Image 1 (spheres, rainbow, N blue to C red):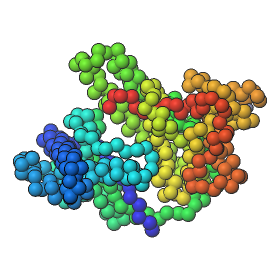
Image 2: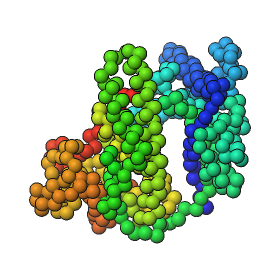
Image 3: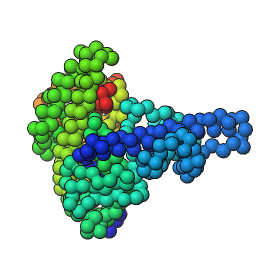
Image 4: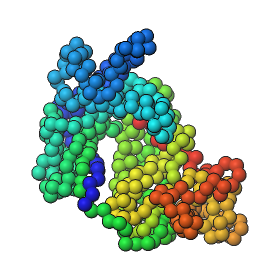
Length: 424
Ligand SMILES: [Zn+2]
């Protein structure tokens, strides 16, 4: 038995009073965060002048300072659980650590900037509880949080409740968040589960995530979008056009922005649920699953809603497969983003110079193959696993295909894309 940390997220149906309490706790976290950041900034200035001045940098130090100052800064502090202030200060301590580690080269990836002040309505509303009465009630329809009390869940909590009753799970923390005016609670749970050494299959499967379909597999299977998702996507396109035509700063635009955010959140939920069903099948019934890597750097550049949606789907697919393949003993391979999966002929290996997003079929100029674009890409991904296996690059998340395989000029057109447009 291994212990893994897992999250269980449930939509909530709070009463108006509870909504106010939830918002108040998130606001309290923000106040503490901003107060701490201001303190750190002044302390840093003082430190510059006199290196004997201490800068409160860690959560315990920040918490100590907060407890000394809270009567002055926030005389109303008793209205919220003390966890809310702690949550804000914890977020700040983490952000400071990320910044410090990034500067000294201990943290990989994009450089982390110095924390910035959070602005109401502009930042993510969240508050994390780590102690106190955090419970999933036995009726499987309610959860309990410190100070806020018993909240009704929108969906059944049975999956988590069952594990808690069996004693194979332990709640470590609960985080409340607001997305497009809907409240959620996410439990961080320590789960004991048996991790197998292999899935019992040696098959390789390539997966390409699209917009028209949820996914295309190298086995020629096409997984359609659920009908509810199709409907939301149509609505999303319409609202997005409406927003684009509106007058910036107008009230009507504000309303359509909010509507768009709601529909977007719903589409994302529907897609996530559908992807969960798919990734479970992929991880349990295959030996190796090959997917494309998302071009994160290119994400902010893109303005196309369609690509944005496909790429959030791609990111979600990868997230789910990463843990599910480890649960079920299969293997996940992520192709290098320069691997031209869409532009390569899956039959003869010829690489097309250019393939626009509008071209739905792949036509090979060398061997005459005509194939659905997504299927061609999925087959190339599956082939990559064989290629890597033959060349003996046995790595866990093999970054297959080196950069020499790319054609000259602009590459990976397909991945030039993405990220939700500026609507949330
Ligand atoms: Zn060909």
